Amino acid sequence: MELIKKDTIEKRMSVCFLLYDGIEILDFAGPLEVFADAGFEVFTVAKEKKPIISQGVLKVLPDYSLADAPPADMLAVFGGNAGPTAEDPEVMAWIKSRDKNTARYFSVCTGAFILGNAGLLDNQTATTYHEQIGNLRKKLPRTKVLDNVRYVDNGRIITTAGISAGIDGALHIVAKLKGEAEALRVARVMEYDKYVPNQGLVINK
Image (cartoon, rainbow, N blue to C red; front, side, top):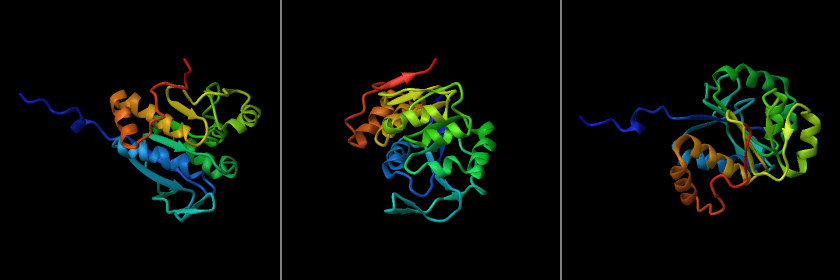
């Protein structure tokens, strides 16, 4: 009897990218490339379904608004001008309302402030952009915030340092879910020679 290939019966991992005005381009563009190349289903969401402007340069039209976004296996949040989003009660309520159906969280750079304000980093270990380590420690006294690390894996929640570190964190997620060989393949496709599996990783047990 011919065996059914595993890929034909596995559900594609869905990833929701939360966007906002002032978001850092590479924070989300790097991981988007990683997840798309690995065969994940990626879609974008913003507070309203109208173009957001990344760093005052790039306009991006989100696929959904908060009101009509479908469920996702993973929520990804990013840095840049993250403060207003992290302090937005509507966004925080939206994140909390989806927690039951969200298997994983991923933050890049100051996106950690968004997860933190939603209460997701309480009693967790995390990192963020190096210039914001002190501010994150003040903001989240119940979180162990690490400096000089590339990314931190809490199991369900992965946080990374700034900007390009998001690519490493995304590749780490691919390695966890689809194997190291797949992560290395994606890195090769992207010509991302910087990626070394587990280099700069802290695992919180």
